[in-house]
Amino acid sequence: MSANDAERAAMQRALELAARGRRGVNPQVGAVLLSPEGEVLAEGWHRGAGTPHAEVDALARLAPGAARGATAVVTLEPCNHTGRTGPCAAALIEAGVARVVYALDDPTPVAAGGADRLRAAGIDVVSGVRADDARALLASWIEVQRLGRPHVTVKWAQSLDGRAAAADGTSQWITGPEARADVHRRRAAADAIVVGTGTVIADDPSLTARDADGTLLPDQPAPVVIGHTPLPADAALRRHPRSPRTFATHDLAAVLAALGETGAHRVFVEGGPTLASAFLRAGLADEVLAYVAPVLLGGDRLALTDIGVDTIDAARRLTVAAIDRLGDDLLVVAHPRPWNGDR
Image (cartoon, rainbow, N blue to C red; front, top):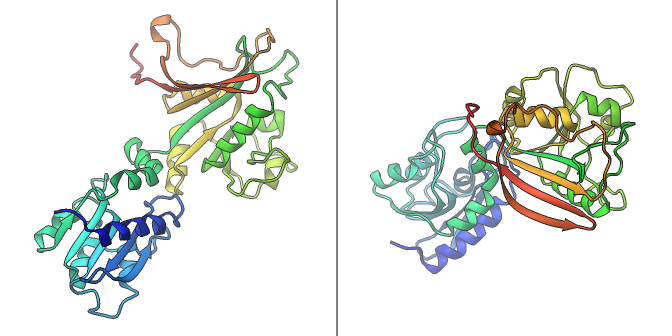
């Protein structure tokens, strides 16, 4: 079986509805209910954890029995488990839906199986309609399911000789305005920005995402500070549009787990050499952004400290994904290769 023109058009609409939802613990999902003649009966989308799923949201907009014989067009396979809400597959069966068209199979074992449940109930099921578009929409959520934690980007700026600061500790600005603008754009795409207390004390960063003129960008990452030193009462990040979260721990996995529980998909680590090295040493970096300026500083203020490499055979190997020219600077985007700590 394949989708017809009305169902494909409805899938486009369902994807638009899904995009209204924010990234979070649950996926962004949209749904459109069609009559047997292909007319739109109702629409729905998922607004966040604890709220009705897209299919149930659409069904709730119809009178009892009005969905009998209808087709449900959904961006993700209807779920087959009971969490804060019941299984959507069961809701569709109970509503008397005759056909379900969806884009992407649910990648989570706990929720998958809805398609099989629908088929067992005698409902026609078509999958894979605009799957690439749905996968692109849910890319960060799918990555979180694969990793079991938020995706982590570790960023630093360095001189050509690998220094993060001059001998007196000054570091603003190693890179030029084009590189700094790129950093702010990437901050805005993250759910959380993480630094250590040492960076807060030394640099007093605002941790906001800003335009070239200093205007705050519409999307702001939540500021997160790791370390045991209390935040100064006048710290700039206390004026951040979002309240900072502090973690008095060095357990980075626990921090990521806590951020994941609040729905963070993308974590941007800007915490200076100590924190960047800790994430790399723990094997918790999924992407590295190294902004390299054509300047020489010398000295011992390295961009990274101990990352657990005591011999060349233990070197952390990276795969370079891109090298971009940003004004006079270079941005190297790389991904750590799998490493199990035994070599």
